Length: 173
Image 1 (cartoon, rainbow, N blue to C red):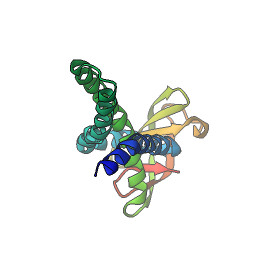
Image 2 (cartoon, rainbow, N blue to C red; image 1 turned 60 degrees about the vertical axis):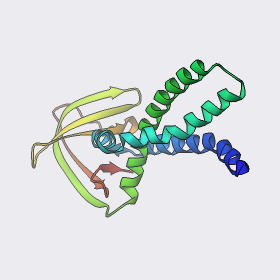
Image 3 (cartoon, rainbow, N blue to C red; image 1 turned 180 degrees about the horizontal axis):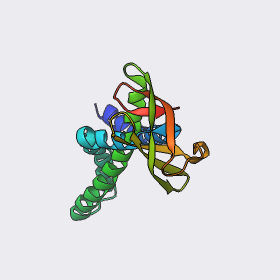
């Protein structure tokens, strides 16, 4: 039994890094994505998973500290600090996993969005379009890669053909 536990302890960091890489890469993979809806869904329903997924890694860190015979108070303080940091990273990568599941699960419907660009925010190489739809006056915030900027300005009319995934999140590959 101890052999299995030691094997699991060795695989925990590898599994966590794989989880992070898949989440981060998938989130940046898409050309256009409704990031507000992804963040909202992750914040409403999946935040406990970020904490639960941090437990094995914190367990591994505590075991690592015990090997070097650190004082108990230091182990407790460091494990609390690491659990907060790890939970934050897990929360950020869960958004990428939500985006991935949105593309895999259910029917993928093609949707045409018509509206007016209300605002354009540029952050590093990515910019965010806030579009007010013509049909129902709802606002949609889309993350768009800079290369695919569509050469539009605030106030311009825009028409986009996007896919609506199984979770109801808009995206374009």
